[in-house]
Image (cartoon, rainbow, N blue to C red; front, side, top):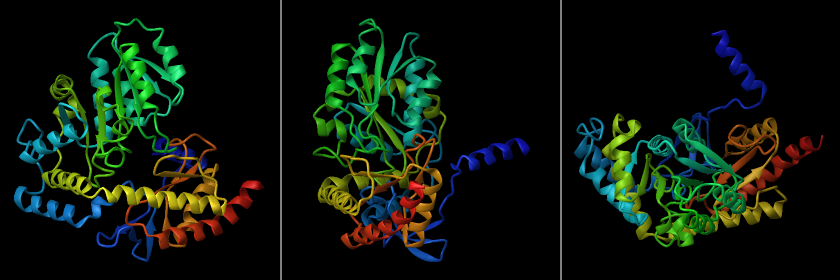
Length: 396
């Protein structure tokens, strides 16, 4: 007990102890929720970017699946856990990314970690060339692979090329990046990355979790937005953000997907996603495809918030995406700002080290089509008052 207590005490002293906010979500009133059954708050940090987890058509599809299929899948994909819904969803996701095949996982984290670890262990001479800002799931997957790894400076294609140029052309290698980075909200230079991959005979693995469903003509993500879908060898995505449910997946050519399906322990030995979740994802895919105004509305709301915050003098990173990072730069004050906003009816979680580097602690805003202009204006008013207190402490 003393061993664990001392570690927790150190985390608290470093001001990075995580406090979970108890919320009672309101499916019919999102983004409103009840905080500790006391007062209503508006959620400003949900990853349900298009509010599909609260969409009546999605909820109805999940209820229908619950009645027809039961509560769980009943086993792994190999042992009774493959339903017709799983097969349909994998085909739909493959088409979304213009790939031959796709494979479902229980989360985006598991999809990243499992796929990269399995690929890295498949050949003794594999090398990963990884963006410095990649997600923890990708880092842990490459680390578990025990393969050669090089890190290029974030979005720096000159540094990437310098690394690639040192490698033999016939060496199996893979560039690993995200299309939209979740904490800064910036886009990867996918065109330049794929051009370098072709020049130096490398594969490209791209995490699209913060872009799929949102960017590109059909919601195929950053690669579709940049016109390089065919140049990405493996796409990793999630069902837990724009599609509003849970789960992860990869998509690529049939041989790669079959290899992961046949050899990855975390896929083979894990109970498959419940049919209810898969049905919800299928309906969300349909709903987003048939209602492109959802994406437009969400992006318009993000632009309004950015404009408001800029006029109010609130420090933000210049994010070109829908993600809005408000930089506080101090863990205690970041937590204090979050608490003060909560008391004013606005919930946005503080993001501290190790999720972001020290001295870049922040509040990370993500809007949805269901946030109204009145909500945005009220939040701006609230954070302006909060910033007067926080800003004064930062100057001291």
